[in-house]
Length: 79
Image 1 (tube, rainbow, N blue to C red):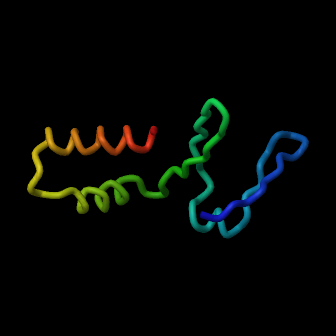
Image 2 (tube, helix red, strand yellow):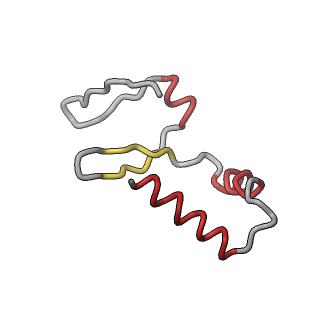
């Protein structure tokens, strides 16, 4: 994971480097945590992204099993 330092200008704007904009786009969701701010890119083509994610879902698991896995991953990431 690379770290970039970004400074707000006098109007509160952030300037993202060209390589970041090319990789992630120019639209982001701002997530405010207790002691952090996270920018999550909004996909350029969300339908295509969902289709690609859908291809990775194991076909042999029930909805109940998928929900359980999602819950376990969320708990681990929140840890």
